[in-house]
Length: 345
Ligand code: SF4
Image 1 (spheres, rainbow, N blue to C red):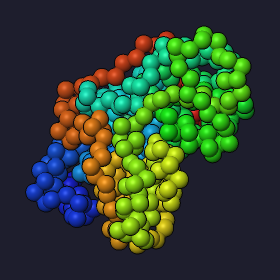
Image 2 (image 1 turned 120 degrees about the vertical axis):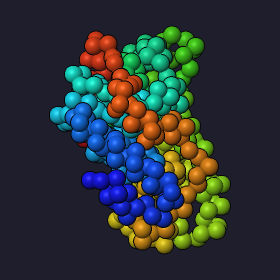
Image 3 (image 1 turned 90 degrees about the horizontal axis):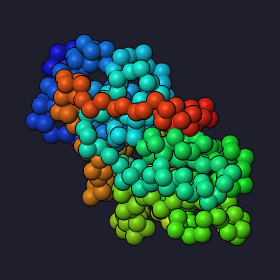
Image 4 (image 1 turned 180 degrees about the vertical axis):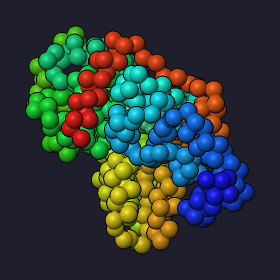
């Protein structure tokens, strides 16, 4: 494919989304990235939150965390370039220890993953001995290594139910935990680590033990936002991610993982939609559904996902940076938690 053909391909999808002058420049970058990708036998995985010009030009696979974890586990390429954030690239490395995994920007972290440490998990488990622990996949590898199983927003309920335990530790997202507790009919508490060493008998009566981690994007959406949009557009269908507060989820018409929201818009026919999640995903859905009207609340962007650009992805392939490495002993423990999650589907 020539640069002109790349530009025409991107234009088909993005004509109403990205200004033409930017599209021409980005098509040149995408052309070079795809050429290098073939030359180096690399695969590019792109999260649903990538900006539209990147999302529609260079990834071999796009999707949510669970999808991309599965793709990472199946690839036969030598290099995996992860256009997402660090914990996602770490998960790819956990599943592919022999492959080179690259993250295009060192700054692509995550407020939620940074909200808990491996030591926090060890202390919590010491307070609640024998209670199985689940970590959301949005955690770093050392935290995954301390729990029994991981989950994503698409399989969190199934993972909790698979444990067959009355009491479950669920980390670190407070809102996802509250939403899962509601769906599974469990009570939830958020204990502090500076309390008594052993859990009080009354705490053990509770069925879900959470942590006060938050996604800095999803915590910003409010019920007032929803009311204001509904007042202006009474026929809007509102979709929210389960990392939003339970009040926002309850006020929405549908809540699900990024993939579930993409599917929902594709398979339904409403006058207009509003997706309460990272703004770029609204653009990506709009590009895939030109016949549907998407509203956006784009004051809320993920500063970490936005670190991943076409420029940095090109540099990543050119200079082999930034390589994700994990100590083997830690990787093996984290692998067990991720594998168990993937087996549940
Ligand atoms: S959107 Fe939220 S959970 Fe996802 S990377 Fe950004 S801060 Fe982390």
